[in-house]
Image 1 (cartoon, one colour):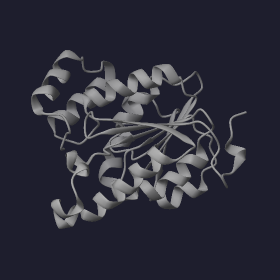
Image 2 (cartoon, rainbow, N blue to C red):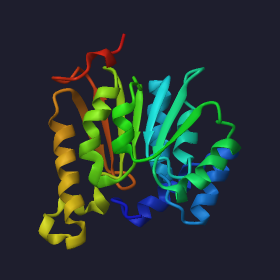
Image 3 (spheres, rainbow, N blue to C red):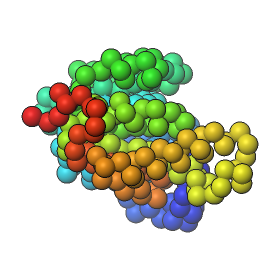
Length: 228
């Protein structure tokens, strides 16, 4: 994975901040040893702080991977809370399922297998937190669904938004095969930073994280998703 901070800083942050304990830590260490992509430690620790403050009841994750992020987020759920997570890659889900079981989360985490573009329109929410860590070129098309599914006061956390730092370059300076994603990510970042319904901050940790707080209902949105 490409990171927006230099390797010296990454090493320092991963040295000073402890790995997670228990079964979650086992999944984390095994993934790192096998070079399986999961959110880096510094990103995970930032999420831990955010979720400790938010104390969500229901979380939606778009991009299950091997289940590490779901396991992490489950630690900060309110009693009786749930996580719904979506992924379409069986190569990831074959590891996610036993990892969820190993962490004792079978009754908390529900995996929906399939394309998020097909599944998101079928969900009703509301979700207090949505974690988006999927195909970067689809972030812009997923955003309206995320807004609909979050109540006012909801938090959208989006990972990998800075494309290894190349997002700051012109599209002609990035490899041709990356230009479509580059264009779509830029459009997504513009939307979340200029959408009046959102209060947004882009943080340069890992490969970039966007934090979007929903402060009002968007025009044309299903207001049944509004917080009670």
